[in-house]
Amino acid sequence: MMGYPISKIVKINTQKQLNKIDALLKKYSYSESKYVVNFMGAYKFKEMFPKDYYLDSKTYEFEDSVLWGPRNYDAVLTQIYGNYMAAPPLSERFSHSMVLVE
Image (cartoon, rainbow, N blue to C red; front, side):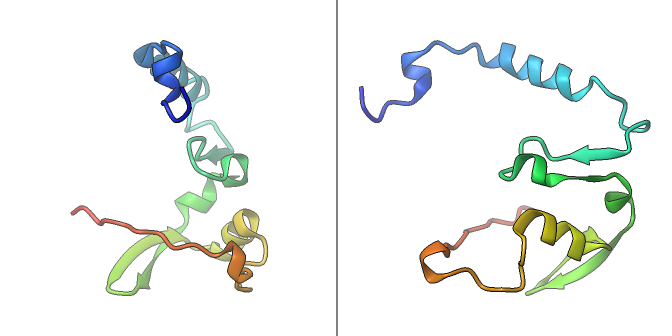
């Protein structure tokens, strides 16, 4: 059984789980919320910010792309990564691959 996805061992009703997540995400009105969170993100509650961080955005150039991001990027990056200006030790570095779909 080693190496099998958990769904092969435990029967999961995916639609039921998605409906539960959707209901939780809709529990509070976005317009009345002071904070927003990328609940499905890799960093969980480190990705919770005052909503105005997302409302006050600007464009940034990154390699050959122009992307939207928060104007207060330093607060966002510091909250998620700590001292993001210092390179991590070699043992903690990894690369990503990304595909941009237009």
